[in-house]
Amino acid sequence: MRVVVVGAGPAGLMLAGELRLGGAEVVVLEKLPEPTGESRGLNLTARTMEVFDQRGILPLFGKLKTSPGGHFGGLPVDFGVLDGAHHGAYGVTQARTEAVLTQWATSLGADIRRGQEVVWLSEADDGVEVETTSGKLRAEYVVGCDGGRSLVRTLAGIGFEGREATRELMLADVEGCALEPRMIGRSLPLGMVIVGPISEGVDRVILCERGAPPRRRTEPPSFAEFARTWHRLTGEDISHGRPQWISAFGDPAKLATTYRKGRILIAGDAAHVHLPAGGQGLNVSVQDAVNLGWKLAAQVTGWAPPGLLDTYHAERHPVGQRLLVNSSAQGTVLMGDDTIQPVRDVLTDLIAHDEVTRHLAGMVTGLDLRYDVGPGEHPLLGKRLPRVELDGAPDTAELLHPARGLLLDLSDDVELRRAARPWRDRVDVVTASAKGLPAKTEALLVRPDGHVAWAGEEDLTAALRRWFGEPR
Image 1 (spheres, helix red, strand yellow):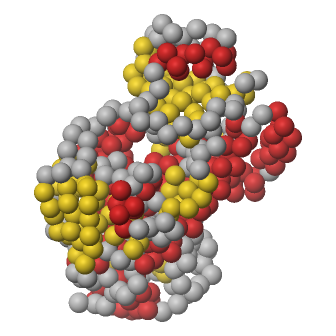
Image 2 (image 1 turned 30 degrees about the vertical axis):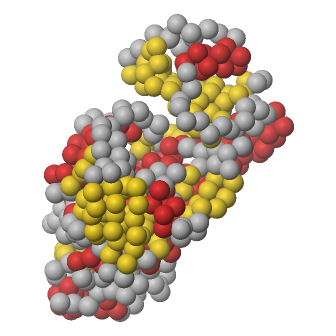
């Protein structure tokens, strides 16, 4: 087996599909026999929508509710100031996202095995042996996508550093109460309450009682406990409601010391845990998988240049650090007591400036991310390529569906196409014209994850070798 992925959440499922697009065999091991149906995540950010568009996944979701609106710590932020074809989608349950990604990954040939709990693994020079409750597997690489309490991370000896939770929050989807919506950002004397409808007759309720200590629960809270906390915070009675599910969680800020240790890698919540401010956890996890998938597939199918797999940690670990900082800051603003009000007031004034709005929106969505891909000053270099309409060819999102490299020849340059020809087994060359790109953009080399690796300023052959290895 080439790759074993542990965990069938959004990160593991997205990674499985990416590996299959790259030609790698993959088995996903999930300890739960069936999906739980629980959905902490409800939002898809603009960058995740873009990623799904670049893989042809969006139609599988059906009609989505989108909006340019967002927030930072409960303070409204207009995400529509950012360039791009997509707004964020709201009310998309994590269960739905997992169902769509399961359908997509299995259609590509991923082998998803439920009821298979990993109990041990050991690494050797030529692979990793994985022991499960049902037997043993051997793989070239193992990726832990098994959540914040990742066994893979622990067994690999990867450090997990940062701050433990300082408060406890509770979440429930409740039927039969017909609750009035309570917007993010409205605090109460004793804590915070958020209420929003998620389907007909069902409200999502999030509670945070100020001073409630974090607890390492082995079972979720009872609805009686949940209703008592609601009553203390609001003075209202919801004990007659019917919970679909209840969960408790905290606000830790912890990050893995490395995303790779030899033949063992981690992604998603296994690499970073934090307050789920703005639904960033699911979205950053999906984006981890998209960054890793093509690189790991290149490694196991034999064409990866030296050091390509190491760029996964180099590129995504800083994203995890930034995620912890911004989610912690949002938690302070969102759940702090009245002493935080001056900070809220200053932030509100700052958000009125477009530059601040763009910065916060880019941080939360991931649309402003720029990787170090090599020399050059082009404004798109290292950044994600938004969907661009092309004359004489499909748009750029459709061209990225197969998760291959893409050379866009925008000036009909015969020499450019000739230079790329030896890499035709892994890089598609498309000649077209386009509008809406920065001035003097004559050609772009785009990685399978949608980030621009070369923009015509340096030697194309060097860029192809750096990101796509030696030609066959």
